[in-house]
Image (cartoon, rainbow, N blue to C red):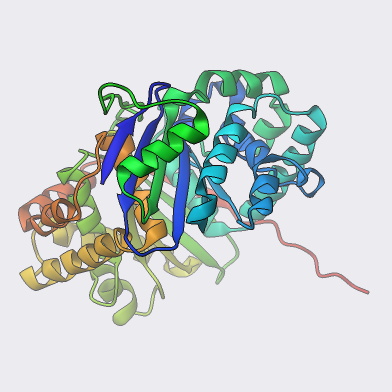
Length: 419
């Protein structure tokens, strides 16, 4: 597991998995919604579409067309801190794929206005679909309130108004500022040794390794917003299934603090032995599938509890969520429950570093936040070393946060078609 910095500033990270006939490749550009100016909101996601070429009218150009020629199917996702383009294909085609990936992102600023209009229509259709998803809307609203006042506040997809107002000039300016080689991390999981990977990348891109590996930079979000909590409950008709979301801002101390947050999430809402399942499903059947999860951004993080339920049960569910947090803060849980949660996280961590695609995501995340790739044994040791006291302290910190009560509008109902 190695990282090398090239002379153009791009970093190449790789993990060797002998015997695999395929390479999983991802090009991670540190250009997400957190880097957008207010007048350029939605630019990162729009550029993802322009690079990939998602609109049916432009599939003859862009990354999608280049990968089609190789028989591969690229994927892309835009987050708050980065945009990632990935593909999985036979090792013999990897050099061509790397060249196509780099060419697509380095020329994305020269788009045609008609192509932009086509991609905007695709994004507006995405937004229309997202508006009908009550849980997704609640998660977006709660996280936006948790990070209010920071660069993490607005969602990567933007709003309908953002997309309609977004100009070609703003997108071009965002691309020229953010899509530079020094903001790119290239990750590869496959059968090659790291030196072979670096040699292949350098030959494909016409560059060479830097004298000193590892540039020590971190372009991740550094601003930590004030500790706050948000509870989002959808306003809907009686009896409708609605999400109860409770989100907390939480510091993401890069190694141990993140491990403590993930273990707390597993203790509360992962599997049949979790506290939320006991409080909300096993005894009272209030919520069928409660869950808790943690999302880290640089030095900031969002800890979220999601419990879809009926409107008449929403207040009771919110009280029981708080009760579960109070139980953890008061250490009113057994060592066995903690060990169960640690096993859940350990299994997920091991799986992420065993399976090719999750391992690729872990690789890029490690390079982005740590400037290195930790060994699996180090990750497992960190998780398994989490104590009851650390988990209880984090729960107590979250309970001390000021709570904002949020309301969501119910999704618009579609009238039944009559023929």
